[in-house]
Image 1 (cartoon, rainbow, N blue to C red):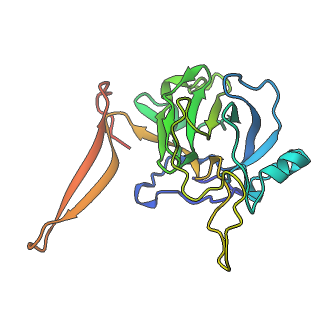
Image 2 (cartoon, one colour):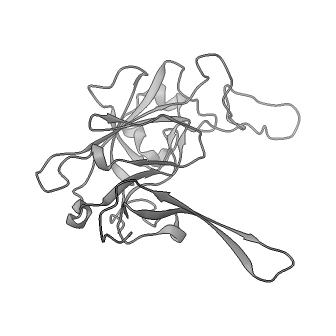
Length: 246
C-alpha cells in the first residue's frame, strides 16, 4: 500500500511484502542540523527520504546556506562534525482502522541510516542503532497514540550522528572523503563524497502479534537434490486467543 507520488514507492523487500504496509518516503520529513544533545525547536526545512543530506535529490538545497551547500555537495561532500547531529521529524499519517485491532503489532522499518540512529516515537525512545548499511526495525505499537480513533498525532523523531566515536575510534567509512585528495599521476582519486542520514526506504507494516516471519535462510544440502530451509520467527509473549498471524 505505497503512498502515491513518492520516490521509490515499491516495497523495499518484495519477498516479505505484506498487504498491510505504508511507505514513509517523500518530502514530508522536517530536518535540522544542530547539537547532538539538544532537540531542535526550529527546523531548517524539508528533506526528501530516502536521499541522504549530501544528495541533490534530498531537496535540502532550498534551505541550506551557501556555505553549507558548498560543504555538503559533491564531488567531495563533507560529513557533519562530531558535536553535530542531523535531526529528522515526521508526523505519521493516519493508520488504517484494521491496524487498531487487538493483537496487531506495528513495526517501523528504516532500510539504512548512516551512521548512528536514535529513534523516538512520541515520548518513547528506542535503542540507538549503529551501522550505516544494516536495517533498523522497531516495534512502535505501544508508543503510538490514537490507534483507536481518538485523534492524537504521532510523531517520529530521529537523531543521526555520523563521525568518530567519543573515544576516538574510527568508524567504517569506505572511500568517503574526510578532506580533498587530488591524487598523483593520471589516475582518478578514488575518494567519494560522504553520506549522512537516511539513504534507504522507510516504511510501516502491521503484523500479527503471535508469530510472524522476520527472515528466511535457505541452504542447499549436497549431494541430495532437495533444499533444506531454515526459518527464523519472532514470538511474542502475549497471544490473543484465536488471532491469526498476518
